[in-house]
Amino acid sequence: MVKYTRWLRSYVGHQRIMQVRACAFVRDESGNILFCRRADVMLWDLPGGTIGLEEVPARGMAREVQEETGLLVEAEHLIGVYGGPDYHWTYPNGDQAQIVTIFFVARMLGGILHPSGHENVNVAFFPPDRLPPLLSRTRRMLQDALAGRVAAMFER
Image 1 (cartoon, one colour):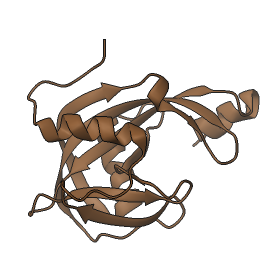
Image 2 (spheres, helix red, strand yellow):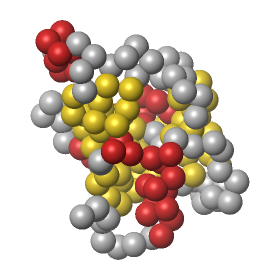
Image 3 (cartoon, one colour):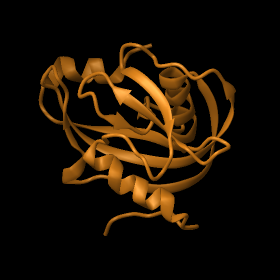
């Protein structure tokens, strides 16, 4: 199987590319929120990652959450779709991306909590009133998740 981003980077180098990311809002039985501490910037983010070609976003989200945290989850509903200037990202190696994020509420099905090692240095649940240092884009998404709206959010 060809790794799409690696293949694309072989043609465009570090130039900005569009990436589609799917991530999850996961709460434990006490209402605490799941976060991953990223190894590249040492800030906390919601679990998730880039989905592959032909991958269904909800399944890609579940795969990424399991890879990053060890937990098995399932999408319950869509919180929102996010993009724009706040979602421009430069990786430590210089690769640039314009990220479009699909954000789901997800329910835990099982698994054992542990970090992936190469992408994250820690994974943990935090109470909503004592959040760790977050990526700026994560704060906006978290506001929508905590608002508990029935309809998905999007920017106009």
